[in-house]
Length: 297
Image (cartoon, rainbow, N blue to C red; front, side, top):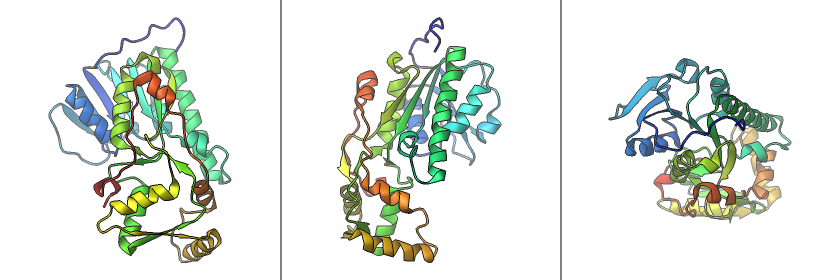
């Protein structure tokens, strides 16, 4: 934000827009806004049930058009690159924007996979675009970068692992899968969005928002398997054996998303500094103790 632009006063908006409101994070953000008496307009490509104080609009960013003058805050819980382009094209601006990005902006920047490097590049460009547009029009913007998300049973990692383990009664990992992780619950992310929204210290900053416990990849998976009913068994096998098994699965058209880069990351420590989030908006995420429903079981 430019030095001569007045900072908006943090307060509860009377009307907020939420993009990605039917997603696993967005639905929790909606709940918290409505509980505070905020009038919410949410966007979804699929029809959603109406609720008091909540208006659903069909479509996404391309259908949203121009932001009405009475909207004081916008929460983006969907793809950051699409949202940043939409926001940059707006003629007006709300006082406040809180948008979710991803720690992939750092994790995948040096990936051996070109597609993953492109993801990191698009995230970095989206953050820069959002902050530049916000600064130009006196909007206070904050970006939250989640780590590995769970809690709604709809994530693309732990719920997938739980589904495979439930189907077979077991799950196999290479013994080298010991990289550190910080899985973060969707409720903690929704709490973070609302806490950041009312904190001036977060204006024009991006924050890593991981979980409150650091554990190894195999420990994380073991806890997921223990949450199932009945619990599934975790088998740790030599890495060369696992690689051979994966090659066979790929030849059969299965597990295409589990590539060499994904295996490398199982060994890598993906741990982020939560101190800035704790300091600036009191971020206090829970430890990792998933229940069956929280991993889609």
